[in-house]
Image (cartoon, rainbow, N blue to C red; front, side, top):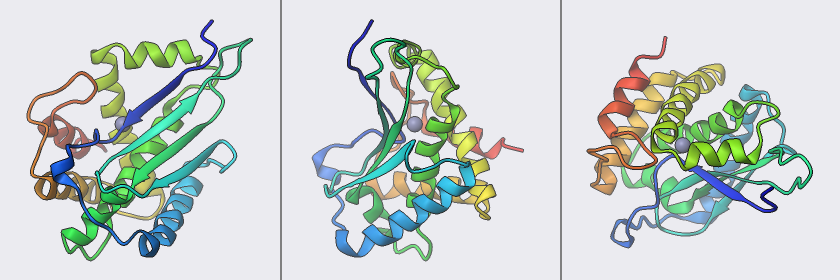
Length: 197
Ligand SMILES: [Zn+2]
């Protein structure tokens, strides 16, 4: 049995240092926490089971982390959403009137949390991460669930998700053209989002 295991499901992988985005961390922090709590309510979660960490680093990125410390059962217990100030800063960099990137990113990470079945073990989760096909499928599922969560929070989920992906791509100057070992291509993610009923 694995004694200690940390995993991460990301929305976008941390990009190279050349794509750093400066953000006014102190100004953004309150808004990010507000958005997170609204989404947490929409998804029916509570902050004891899933919390948020904002990292003051300029590389755009986000992830959903968890650890497995239940030695007896190996059961997944709780998780943490992480978002960087560089990710949040994309909204201002793109001069957007609404923080689409923050909303979608947090909804996507919370979707990962919601989609982990009750009783799932850390071995189940590592099985997803170690298998590119399963990992990409889980990312697409998280994108679709994010659209639904945004809708529950009273937003146009498809619009928020689509804008966030497009803006991220434009501002960072890098779209994932081909799938990689963890994520589907940008085109596949966009089509998947627009297919949500
Ligand atoms: Zn993800």
